[in-house]
Length: 254
Image (cartoon, rainbow, N blue to C red):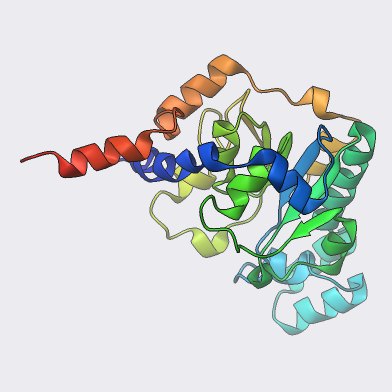
């Protein structure tokens, strides 16, 4: 079965949960006023064996990060560290974007992500736990979002089903190069899972802050026809009955 087919089968059944989200209740629980725009940032997993995340984008002064990188055998990253912290620049740009748009910046994380302090300080609302199971927490947050910023994650699918435009920030994924389907998922070519004009815009981590600076929510709009094609290719539909169809196939007499 192709990657697209697997995605359509497994992803669409989980995404049926959108129909169960109580949007007003979710806003009340998070303290977000009705009608207030929401920018959802899915935080980057830092605790992975990827040098950029461990040394260039971590907390601490440039001197400290450069010293740690050099001592760990990553001298080649020292110039990147001195150039600046692109993760912090993106978070700052998202903060400014929210001010211009009158939006709340909601950050979705998990304890294992080990978020840097600058990210936590920037959030208006930080959601760190996954207490909700059905519908699950990410679905609840996406259901009230107006824009999602993520790092080449499955949030692209959730956003598309919710008709939420998303910015997929391309980051080094050296720890995943051996995974089947790596290029299809993380390659970022136009027309693929993480880069589909009118639905999800793929952008490199260096360019991402510039894509947010000076812009507002009005600059990110879902194209209905592009969304239809994206869902058809990667999800299989958004009528909320994918689980029923899968169950029908399982229970069909042989």
